[in-house]
Length: 338
Image 1 (cartoon, rainbow, N blue to C red):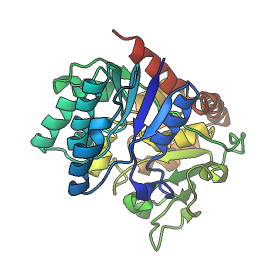
Image 2: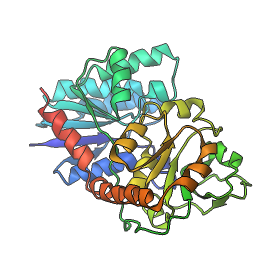
Image 3: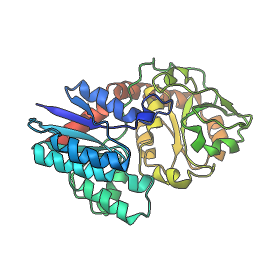
């Protein structure tokens, strides 16, 4: 069979210490193992270049090629080009077109923009299958009128070349990794016993005494520096909930940093209202909290035995994430789904 993966990331992201494109490039890696050919569409950014791409490059796209299945890594940050690419795939091939949905942009950045929402939903209804993050995302799309068959991914796999972190003393240590510009809540932490190690670019000038900035590393290097008991997944500027657009988005998406921690064998702490909370509780690979102000007490009351259960489960799950088991299984379901 001739199977393709189509993707595109912004050129400025390719060598960044922000892990933005890693979810897409990891899927490329795991599907290459399955014999897929990966095509970087290297899409233009400016409106003029997009028009030129549509007029001169797109008509030749996949022409005279026999293709069985196409995995399209969505979004590519242009509804216009996405629609044009779908049209060209339909015209030039008879391939089954499967969207791996990394983000629902209507929920992530265009909430309330009815024109954008309409365009994005039309795209989702124009393909043969969608791979979505979780049941919450699937339910939202169905409520909005998406009728395309959907497969739930469960969790993002994660190419992690570093060793799985071994069991260490339970000392109430927590790490947070990500773009620190968006992590205003860190400046408000007031832990008495919990130690918070912070990794990533765009750090603040000053943090509370319980927060220790550890530097910024490339995504594939970062895991070897994470040696804390837990990894935190939180968003926004408040401690009592995940706030703002991205905080609300956690009710529908699978934050990729979840997979950074879990692929390192580190159990996680996540907001109880996050869509990912159900997976964490079901697989016993972390804890869910309503409010970060409670975390000191929760960790202080945690037994060594409870922590070791979470740690061992996270270490076992790490092996699956490092082998791409979730994306490989989802693709298999999408292809065989009639």
